[in-house]
Length: 222
Length: 106
Image (cartoon, rainbow over all chains, first blue to last red; front, top):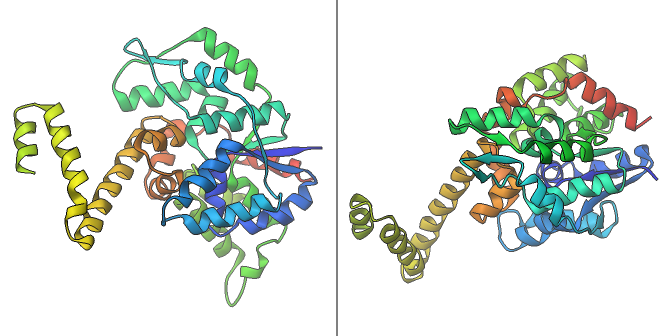
């Protein structure tokens, strides 16, 4: 059965925008399963439940997991984590780039041969799609030369070559196109207003999408 | 705080950090409202620091882990910054990515 794997970031964008309930109709249209790894569940539920600020969001996500809308899965990813975190080197020391939860989600997407890996987080997306751009970004920001361990990079590139990345943005645009948000088109609200509100909501609550991309999506949907 | 300032002026970083740690631990002795306000300031400072680390290319998960905050805190903050607008963040044409996403639902 086909499936999508979600990283913590994409679920956070959805729940903080009050859009998580759209996953159910989207899943029916997708005709497949939605997965998260166990460590993502920890970041989405267990950790925020320890505080007050995002406790409600944690309870909402917990309910979605309980109802099997997001299925959880566990895997051992220590070697992949070490591999990624030894790829970029500055001053002869590796840069610890990513966390276990992020790597678990990526590994799960590969192991399950997912149709796509849903990730709003910029670093992980760059690592998969264009690690050289990530190197350039770090060099510009850190004012320092970054060296890439080419053997590790080649191995990693082979490992992720079939991974396709989408963000919560694309998922919500699909929901918009299916008319799943038409209930918000009340009074004088136009489709363009709704789209603008949707895309800015996603961006302002953490999805790594640029203003230029927001503008281009609005143009594309006209 | 005066002691911490003195340590910092004398370039005694370890002494500065120790003094600050003691100060934070002793917060429970002050009035509950003041205690809350001071903790909020520290929490906001952590989130702001975390966003700068993420801006330099470290992932959200790793940054949150480093600073002991949740990813919710961090994403809520970074969304209001220009981090996602960095020129290097652009990888695939938005139309192409959207077309691919559409194809998953056919």
